[in-house]
Length: 246
View 1 (cartoon, rainbow, N blue to C red):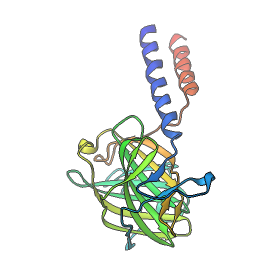
View 2 (view 1 turned 180 degrees about the vertical axis):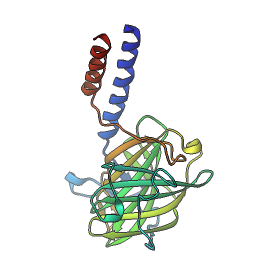
View 3 (view 1 turned 90 degrees about the horizontal axis):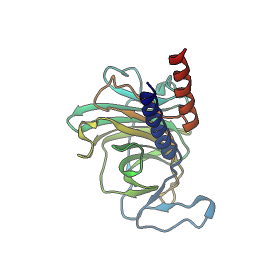
View 4 (view 1 turned 30 degrees about the vertical axis):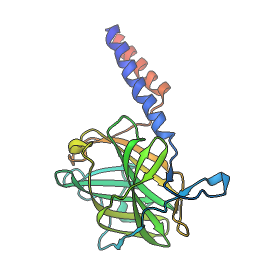
């Protein structure tokens, strides 16, 4: 029994450490560019990739198909993006093979984004899809997150449309997932926000709003939010031990 307890503590502690690392990441978009002179908000703007203006919405991001037609991830879990609230929301619907429709809704004066990782935490050359507010018009970017830096790519998002209402950004697009994400199983999915300078196309440091584990191809996939600290994880195991021994 004690051997199983030790193994359980090690597993929970490992998950907690990975989570703390992922949630502490602050990322900055980078390409062949000039650096902002303000030292308190260091950003870099892409000069090698054209900005893609997104078509106007003919619909909105919604949660009515969650668990049936589409996989939904959000914070809080009760988020309904169609009501105009300030919650953050991602949905995924498999179209065919590695081709998926993704929808984002969130609050940001700059941009919102989703990052997909096959590792235990984001930042391992992970594909990131970005929707930015450019003077109340959505513009899109695709980047790779390597360490704490976003590297712009020539990749695009198909059938893209979106809307901006105040600080609420919504976008829906089709994307071909990288081959390193086989069947989209056991992915770490992160929701990011950050600032955006529409004048020079500069993306600011992204912040990880939430990170969840999910299978994008399974609408009923159970997503787990990693928020526990190492101390909390150990306390849970200790409580379980006392219950077992009582």
